[in-house]
Length: 499
Image 1: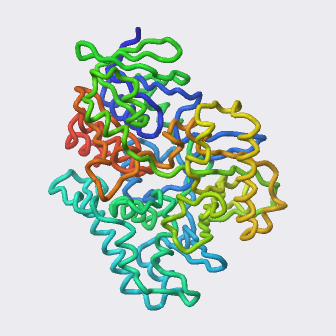
Image 2: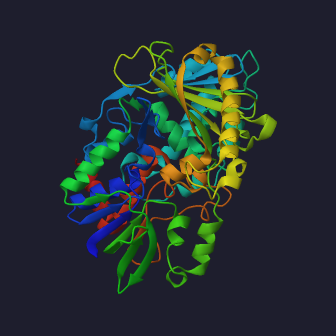
Image 3: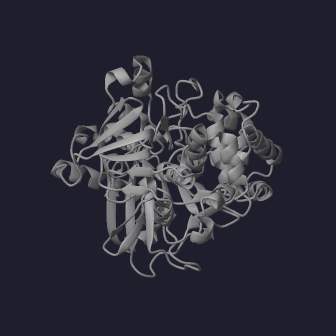
């Protein structure tokens, strides 16, 4: 039996960052990962010579002096990565039919670019930006400051949909498109639900307006750098080790893997879904009320993804992300089924080098209700049957038809396609139901849908996208909160601010 100071279940970004922090502080750390490759959503994969991003297509607040950049300096990541800043005048292009609108970087520029299409919207746009700045100011850790007056709770119980719709009520473009729908047109970034809290949309939008970047060559460089650091600090990252049972005796955690290995630790951190974690524990270890609450939580919408390898020199590299909406209600697209699907798509070209003229690969994503594939949920990758293969191909063709209508040149540019369903995403990244961002935060029940990093079980903690906030920035801050419970948050933030 191997004994460690800390065992971390899951090597997603949250698990790796916690491993880095605690390893740097002298803890003997072991990270157990059930997949063959560490990284969770940071993973990339290769098919037929093409390299694809699994989940991280662009990152916000990574410019000099911005929030993520300041955190990642502590993790020694900035010198390891080459970045491509997206188009300053349009990092996200929002389309409704034939009408396209830019979301720009920089708060003044964000206003300027939208005013070309909404000349009467200046006051509303400025008030919206003031609002999200107010939200950001209420979350000290977003500003690398210690929590103080807990003003953030004021925004966790407010609705993102209500604020955006009220803020831009009646402001239309010449083509009749609502400014509120344009501003919410990239809500795929935060799950696009009618119950999304204001703080979730505001923090995420603020980060991307501050600065939007792609990681040249793939986000797996982040996980590779963190694994190397954890190892250099004396830690261990073990892949193909799926934890199936957790017990606690005499203030020690005993973990058993599917492969039959046993591990012992003083501290346990779970970077996987809380419901999946608690399911591994004996009933007497977890309070029934807590077990019931976690099991009842809804997940964010899953997605259907096409990974496309392109013929050389056939399709331009787009230095922005393209969000297309088939209808006018951007908040209902996640539930679209049957004849109404797909309600939207996000198209993103990967950046493989500086000065890239043509795209080598692109990813097309759309919401996909989990129930569409529920009949195959107990099957494994590669063994789901012919009916599954036919169904997902049917869905792929339908999504491509919508994309081809906007990008007709793509029809003759495709060399290879990989299709990912919610089940594929679930099995390769470990996210429950293949959800985009784990547990759905709900402004109507903010306390119920918030999972705290510290639990009632002594020395047992959660980290990752199910705590705090999802996304690269949210998970980074969440890892600091988790480790702050162990080391002392004031101590840790001082280290980060002086890195």
